[in-house]
Image 1 (cartoon, rainbow, N blue to C red):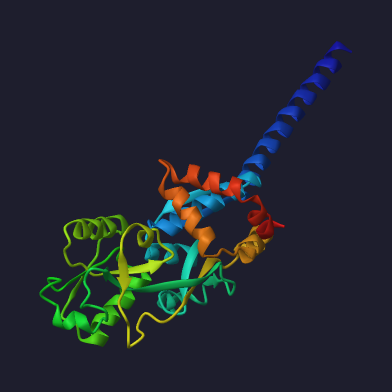
Image 2: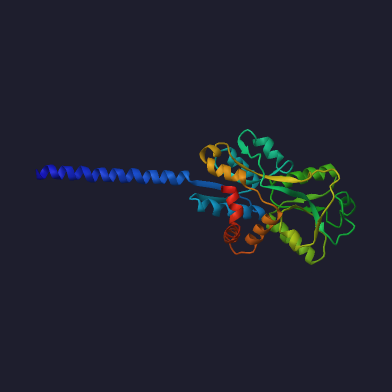
Amino acid sequence: MEKLKGITKGFIILFVLLLTACGGENAEEEGDDDTISISQIEWSENIAVTNMWKYILEEKGYHVELTLLDMGTTMSALANDELDVNLEIWLPVQDRNYLEQYGDDIHFSDETWFDNARVGLAVPSYLEEINSIEDLKEYQELFEAEITGFDPGAGTMEITEELIETYGLDYELISSSEPAMLAAIGQAIENEQAIVAPLWTPHWIFSELDLKFLEDPENVYGGTEKIHHATRSQFEDDYPEVAQWFENWKMDDEQIGELINHTENTDDPYDGAVEWVDNNRDIIEEWID
């Protein structure tokens, strides 16, 4: 009888151990299923919205990984199912090449989260004689035949290369990063020098520095741009609730401006995003209702 009790006790312990192991494995699988990877591009508005969504999604129980990538790598990763989400696609002009290249492999949302974006070449407002891209030909020496750019592979950089050809400009487009480009603009304005760079709105720099867009008579940059998001092809099947939240997401000039201001003016952009979300719960509820 004692031997039977021992055997029974042994089976119970073994069963509990197996159950615990299976439970741990399921928890790990659920954790993996609840992890959403989002690319972060080193642009002020992208840093703002990626941190905003990280906070929103983590509040809802998801684990969010933000991975710093350039635009080209981001699109390739989405197409190869190595990334879940890219929150910033500018259409119809800036990122049209990516839409054409990856349209069959990536889900490009029809819905937009910002409908009043603009892209163009900008110069300091004190350059009163320079108001059109056409004027750059006459003032080539003043600008040292350079357009100060940002990330190589960004759609706007590719469009700017097309613009140089369209207008017959004998200029070189200098690649760097957004922070480096903004620093160069700030330095030039401090010294009242000439500089020309591709910029866009929404962007905090227009509230900090006196800049103007140059007229684009050939409309190379297009008119009003709309900002979409993109996901890997099966994301909606795997995360239908989150996919719907992204579709519901809408922001106006004031809202995105305030969010960028919060993330730009804190040591950690995430903390700024948390503060903005906590102050705008009514807006967030409209997206995730």
